Image: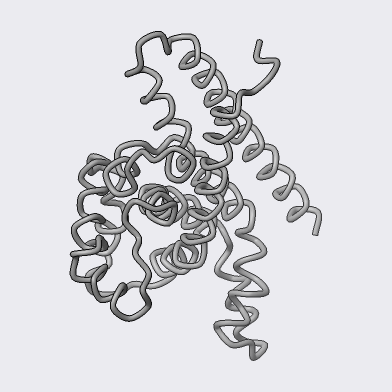
Length: 232
């Protein structure tokens, strides 16, 4: 049983939670927009767009991290332009860790939100249109509230995935203690350290506990929101 967390463990947890929250904040608006587009619109290239959005699910995370590094790194085409215009650099910072986690988790949230939007009866949206509501208002007042359980479940699932991200993070953000060293990276460091087996086991239990708690919370919140929506 873990009675007292060490400063090293607390720092790894802090970085993981910070990165996870920012990752969810980054992907929520585009994920909801992409999910609605895939669920409610037909257009040329839809299958290709769907495949591209889900590509991070099948690519090795290290490949995703490398692509982020060569495009958003200090010498990359986008990264160099961003640095020249704003003085901001992403690679090997907590921002890189958040962005890497966001890219990996993005397809999971899109999938969850899309399924939830597809479950919303189109008749309700059509009724709102006939009453003079604009597409934006229909989405804001009808589609999104009814799809909210899926949105929340997707956000929590994306957060849980961010907590476990390793390959893309270590490639794009490195393994810097106190800055980019999340729980998986800290566990990796301890596993490479002689005599670090006990500390690694403690971190492993912490990671399992956080991930399990997040998934349980996701299920509970989704059910609660579903019941609230049905009662309305």
